[in-house]
Length: 103
Image 1 (tube, rainbow, N blue to C red):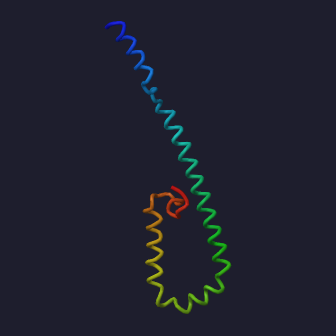
Image 2 (tube, rainbow, N blue to C red):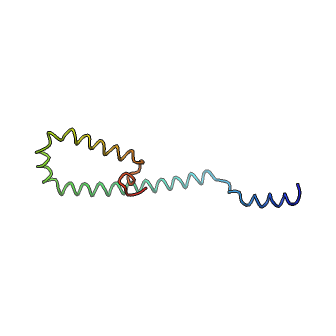
Image 3 (cartoon, rainbow, N blue to C red):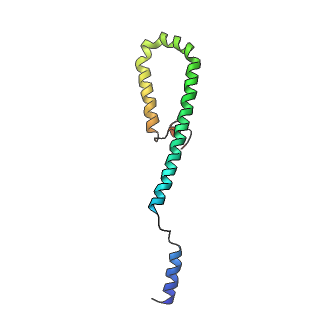
């Protein structure tokens, strides 16, 4: 090899990406996934609490209406609940994405 080839080789070596440490990458991804999990649990807890409070507030009015129309709506409400759950699961697996709150 000539001296020019050696200089080019050292210049090209500086542009190479650094070697990856798989243990470090795994640890970082674990931390990221734990943070996302905590965010998902916190968001779902908040939505559940708000939903429970809203249901508690409107239940006396809603109960009389449900008794009046329950015989005809029971199969349809089951299908709607199933469709909602399937939409939540199939929208990417993340609850925030399913509710349109994030990506």
